[in-house]
Length: 86
Ligand SMILES: [Zn+2]
Image 1 (spheres, rainbow, N blue to C red):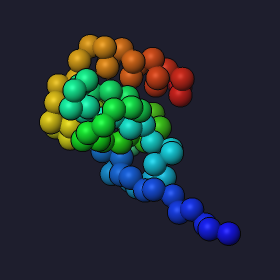
Image 2 (cartoon, rainbow, N blue to C red):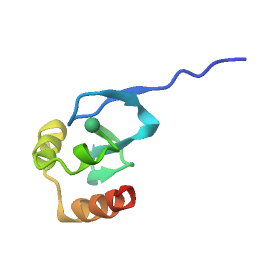
Image 3 (cartoon, helix red, strand yellow):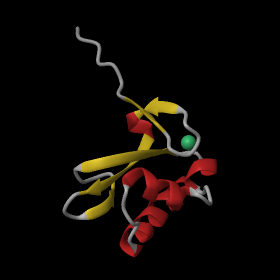
Image 4 (spheres, rainbow, N blue to C red):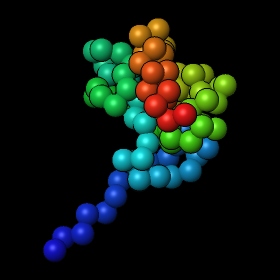
């Protein structure tokens, strides 16, 4: 049996490394702009801890990490997503 090792990624807020499946992936798609859990391009990850997804500097950190601007559509989708974790 082949043991599948988890893909580890770092949360941009707390800088802790997690299994990629336990993180929110935010991608700056080169055509479609910044997207949640989809798209191809530069990506950043946030863990699902309240401290991180409600980080007041999160939007700035994301924009810096993704080298893009968060659009209102993304913020709307993101806020709806994190509402599930509360
Ligand atoms: Zn975190």
